[in-house]
Image (cartoon, rainbow, N blue to C red):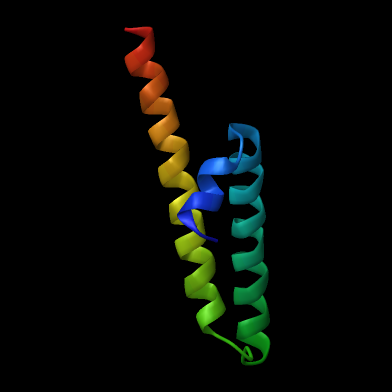
Length: 69
């Protein structure tokens, strides 16, 4: 997921995507414990996507704080 795609999402969509990605990571880690993943780098990609989404969410929250002051 590119940064430009993240910026196009609404705040509600960001929160939903974060939850979805976290669930994906948990599921993949459990699968990896049982049998090796075909692509173990997918965990790294998912973590980085979560970081991108959370960064955008925090940026928006900070902008709202600044506007309210």
